[in-house]
Image (cartoon, rainbow, N blue to C red; front, side, top):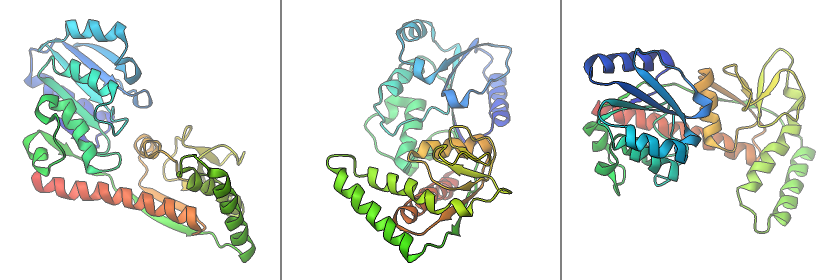
Length: 291
């Protein structure tokens, strides 16, 4: 079974119901990612294996020898890369192939595109989906249920003077000259950070903000690494989509207001994140046809 968008209490309920139906289970193994270390309550013996340890020999061979159909494996928030043949995924598949009892929990159904859902289907049944691309019929063929999470994007205009626009263009030219063989994504990343200097006068003491790093040195500006509060005003979007997903999951954020200069890099990031959430909404809508 695959469950999307659940909080820890809802996950616990699903586990309890599964154990009530499958009384032969003697032990639970939870594969989890370190940023989502959720504990579950059960009378069964339970072992937690952190994502980075899935490939470790001290776990791998012992678990392969131990796991059978008296084990339930819970894969909890482990979609960490879009590479379906990632080594950690492949090691997890070896564990999962040992038992028929599997629950896959993930907050969003994708990282970037609907094709990422195949990662979750591989956890459920790697042999069935090996070498296959995404098909909506696969959602129907498995026990998949999805809880939707709404997210509203809002642009807060940061007016820029002609002089500031000129400074931006000079900075862009400077970065282009130094780009050479670097990743081309370096350009919007650095420009997006640079634009933060134009937003300082729009950071007010009675509001809370979220930035990519701690350069502002202000008590009301936190980073994606340290954020605990929901619905903060965004100064910079993170480079990695997974950092944004972590923020949404851990805080329950449903409002993404962004300080937007509307200059190139800001415009690109804002539209990119809006388009990403559009793909999530599309998945929600189409999946509901099948379930």
